[in-house]
Image 1 (cartoon, rainbow, N blue to C red):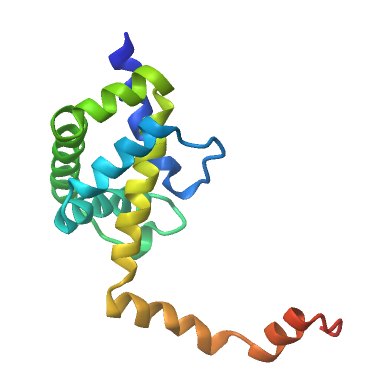
Image 2 (tube, rainbow, N blue to C red):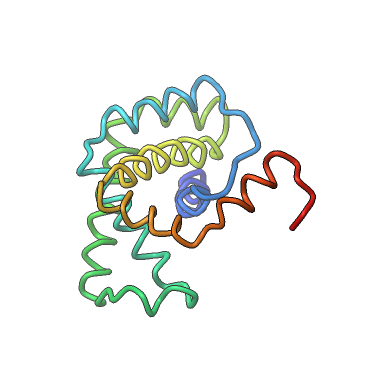
Length: 155
C-alpha cells in the first residue's frame, strides 16, 4: 500500500516543479535532493526535461507549437521512467527510504522539485535559449518599466 502512495506521489512531484512548495524540506529530503542532483548527469537531467516538455506540450495552449509523435512520446516516457526508477530504487535508494520513513512521501515531491530546478537551469544556459528569451526585450517599454520601479505614478 505504501508503494501505491509513492507511485502516485511521483507524477504529482513532477507537476509541482513549477509550483512553489510551501513546506520546508527536512534533512532527509535535502539528502535525497542532493543525491538526485549529484548522482545524475546532464544527459539524465536532459532526459527528464524532455519528458516534462513532452507532457506540457499536450496542453491545448501550446500543443500546436510542438509536434511529438506517439512513438517519440512513448520513447520519452520509457527513458524517463527508467531514469526515475533507477534514481529512486537504486542510486538514491537509501536517501529515498530514509526521507519517506522519517519525513513522509511528500519528500519525493520536494526532492524532484530541486532536481527539476537544476535541470531547468541547465536547459536555460544554452546560448540559443538565452537568445530566444532575449527576443522578448524588443517588445518591452523600458521607460514604463523604469518609471514603475522608481515610483512614477504616470502610466
